[in-house]
Image (tube, rainbow, N blue to C red; front, side, top):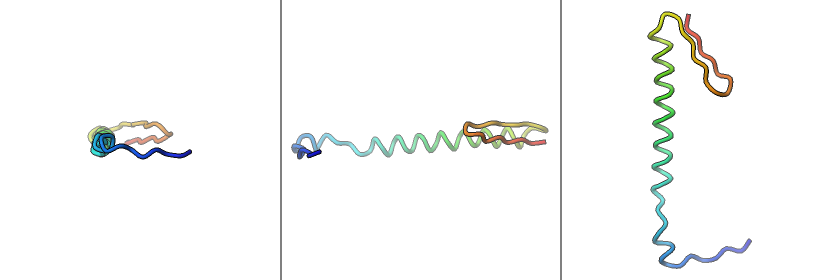
Length: 60
């Protein structure tokens, strides 16, 4: 596959900050999910949480 060189206008329209914003939002989402799991485990007398991928946490 042979690529084409971008014109000056096309190069100016590329915004690399979008990827960093998406990565930051996904990181905050992952941290908030783990915070809720930890809250549920440690603030209850007996609890459990199941995450996708077969992860299961129980607190007795």
